[in-house]
Amino acid sequence: MTKVIAIIGSPRKKETYGAVLKFGEYIKSYGEIEFEPIFLHDYNLEFCTGCKLCFDKGEEYCPLKDDRDVLMEKISQSNGVIFASPNYAFHVSAQMKNLFDRLAFLFHRPRFWGKACTAIVTQGIFGGDKIVKYLNSMGENLGFYSSCGCVLQTLEPTTEAMRIKNDRKIKKAAESFYKALTNGAPSPSLFRIMMFRMSRTMIGKLQNKEYRDYRYFKELGWFESDYYYPVTLGFFKKIWGSFFDFIGNKR
Ligand SMILES: Cc1cc2nc3c(=O)[nH]c(=O)nc-3n(C[C@H](O)[C@H](O)[C@H](O)COP(=O)(O)O)c2cc1C
Figure 1 (cartoon, rainbow, N blue to C red):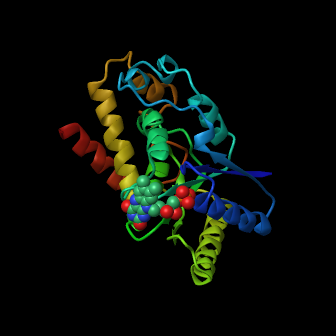
Figure 2 (figure 1 turned 30 degrees about the horizontal axis):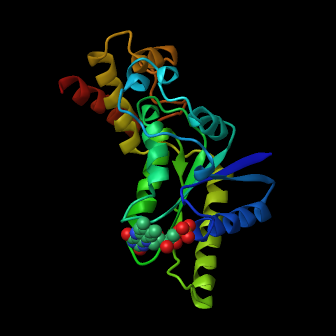
Figure 3 (figure 1 turned 90 degrees about the vertical axis):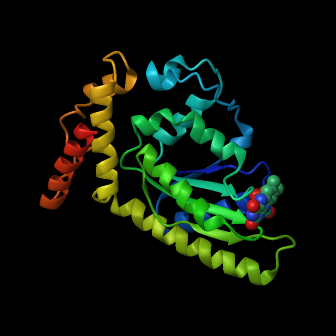
């Protein structure tokens, strides 16, 4: 059974939560999906203290003892994740941002390959398009491949016309997420190849062999591979990959 979770960054169960439940109903109507909404507010996730032990020594050295690993395990057990947040001051909510801060070590050593992600943003007026892009890029930095997502206008009191329009957007986003989920991971973009090749050159050259990133790349054979996961790169992507190695070495 395909498992999808929705990570909800709103502090209240209202518009964002309602949109997520509707999204879940749509994807469940397309195929065999087990759907679980995860309300971040119900979990104990403390603020990062900036010690960087997760980056340097390993995530197990984090001094904060809270629900971070529970949330990571939920992501690991899923095939797809919906990141849903209200627009707060032109960005994601603090709860959602805190989750990304706490998982930022994974940007160095991504783990969630082969999983799809998308984004739902609710807002009063405007600014949500950039937030959807941000959420999708955070997902990609964690290893996911993304599908378009949606921005919903939820200025209170909501009208029937707004609800109909939002419902249409949710349905469209749910369809493309479901398609992405069933099609599987696409070939990595040049940008993603560049990110991989340049960061591995940096890790290989600058990091002491005790560093967690270095050990992780070594253990997974990433210093020799074309990309993070087994993929056949076409001729041009291979050439670009070598070019990014060259530039990384020069820098
Ligand atoms: C603290 C706060 C900041 C907000 N900032 C914005 C904003 O910058 N732009 C916007 O369009 N809406 C903004 N809103 C409106 C919310 O995005 C909107 O009401 C959203 O639907 C709330 O989601 P919820 O019902 O899940 O709580 C803000 C709301 C709050 C409470």
